[in-house]
Image (cartoon, rainbow, N blue to C red; front, side):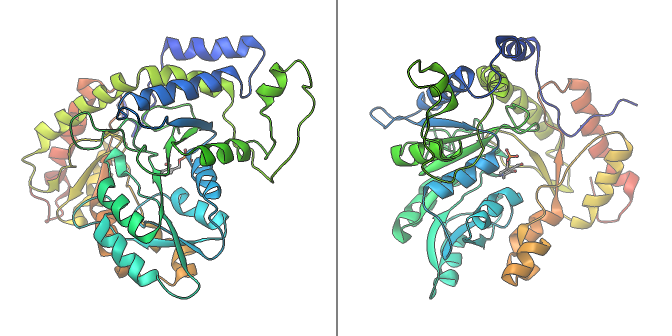
Length: 400
Ligand SMILES: Cc1ncc(COP(=O)(O)O)c(C=O)c1O
């Protein structure tokens, strides 16, 4: 039986040629390919910017985790600062706050959605306000590529003086609701995209920080490369003093090598094609499963990074997952909320029930494969197995 993996990157001849071109060029680390990738990424996002808006600068990094770290560092986040973020996310969103000695304050999901919103954020703010705590920033996460209500979050952030760093790891490209609206990730002080192997476009490992703020762009650029005042490429291409540089801050080693940037450039050129492929898989799932009594389908729109079913009876989730696994179909669970992870639970003395929506979503969701290149037959096999699972599992709660 052929197995259908949960995720699989879509790469072809052009990607292979791009990587070979760099391999043969003799320059493997960050250089002209990374610069071109940044310029092309910025141009892609600017196509949807309103006329006269400041340019979006794009800074390539070796992961979204390092990008989030750099963005918060550039905002001056440090000990005593509180950064608000969903409990329902991957640990990268929160760990970067801890790298800087600041405190993560978790926000529950808004109502029935997969994202945080203004009501939950305001509630978390009112609880967290107190002596010694400085609310400094919020990190909305566009779960599965579904855009958060950025208008409402930004309004609230403005009222409380919070910076906004969008975790857009899942959200490239994801238009905000509304015709010709800007892309998710471009509306805050900074946004961060991921090019990890399972993401919507990939460089294997990689990420991009985007910002319209010159001060943030300069700091991110400096700190991603050891806090050295000149990039290695700048030194290489300067005939006068290629060897001279100054260390002006204790930076990090977060640059994206050309080998990966070249891959990213090809993937970027295919971004809309890849989105259409994911959308067409989602449409097939939607059409075939809409009358399935046991599950709630994901909301439409966004980058379609994940296709997440919600089981009306959470007891059905694990048997269905098991059934699909036995049929050779890979699935996953997004996310195990951070507030029940041993580290965060103990550090902040959190109880599982304090974030009821995150806990509920964790218990009821199952992510199905949705990768470009899945054949119609593979999509149909997944649909067939999801439909058969109730009868086959016989858990009682399951009704198709
Ligand atoms: C919501 C979210 N944020 C950040 C990251 C980190 O991305 P990366 O692996 O590129 O560091 C991930 C990774 O899966 C993620 O799911």
